[in-house]
Image 1 (cartoon, one colour):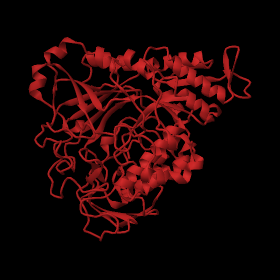
Image 2 (cartoon, rainbow, N blue to C red):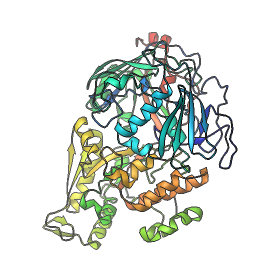
Image 3 (spheres, one colour):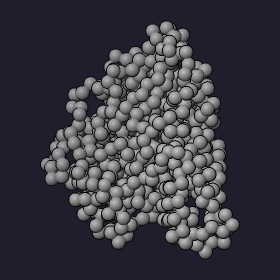
Image 4 (cartoon, rainbow, N blue to C red):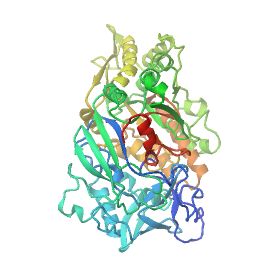
Length: 601
């Protein structure tokens, strides 16, 4: 899963039927831990990295709160101010190691997990982190926090304080093997701090944390400044050695990507992750690249890139018709867009678990077919007989064959054209579709689609709104079609309920943007959660992927299995890079480079 992680016990404990073992220093999903109990640092961290200097980055949009745990407001990125029970490593598919938790002990029948806390753990005000704080955090997030926590923790019955440094979580579903790691990712909050504060309120008062950074200043919608905690209690733990090297991290907020790029080129901030093929190809043709002052780096990764696509809101009656959703698949001319707009940089996405061994392909066979067979009468027959394929074009830009196929699908479903406008069966008004976006880069992708829809007789328009309005409309599902990304981990789990589950469909703030209410999807998500080994997990994920694809909820976009970074050359970074992410906390300011290129600290 993402953020709130998935997994079971690893390293010292075996698979089902195991005998009880001693408490472990880490957790892993269906396999051994890479790092033993006496490890000194992650392999992708440089233990002698110098501390100091500033990392200045940018974010698009705005913020009006420093509370990231509730549905209210738009929060700034303050995750590094809070420590969690465990820390995920980025060079394993899914493993976590103790941070606040010194040891983790899972019951032999997976009915509970017990965390023993480090006695030296401290909040920024010097007060100790206790089991009561952990239990308070869990109870508060589940009852008052963002609604997603109710799904993540739905099968955790209770948090029990054993003593000041021991807390036990009991589970209602002993088959859910990722619950221990979900709880390991719990950010621990101070119970005493919230005794006089409303947890659900938006606030610009920094929340009391225990992490490596704390908020130095926050100017809503403009900038956030974090400063390194010099006496950070966990700085010498193996999970932190060689990490958290910058004295200050500054995030400037921009309403527009193009303005942000120009600010970067003018030296207003240090580093950006470039997500535009056009900008990557054209925006950085600068003398500074030739001189070495500006660095462009393409860093391959093994991360499942998940799904990026145009999501159709099935809460709207028009998109409850599977024929319309199927026809919509033919209006995106990816081959033309890739050649004309993206400089040939991308590959078309055809899986919700793209770039992973969990992506479905061909037709279902073996264990996957056996898993899907009981649902045959609830699924399209073609799912069992045809490989799912995204429509392809000749790249000429006319897309005649695609639009012809779309029209035939609609005509067969009873749609008809009257006076040049397309009407759904028995409709008194012509079909209209609005695309909700918040940036110009997406507009370049969507506008050709609206022109294609116009050729079918569909009134289509693009509505661009600012970041705050966009976020509000996403949370309340106020759109016909919008663009979204669902990232995936190497071990999907509980978060799939948040993405596609029926219980999340009508809950404001969920990530079920399509409004999917499908009992087959729900059943397959439960199969993923209850998977007893890696093989059964992969089988269930492939089956879910296939059902989602054949549901035509999303018009798949494209992907690149690499990070594109552009940065001013003042940084050192470890020679070893992790397979499953970029940990900028392992970078540092190289003072010699900063002086050479006159880039400051």
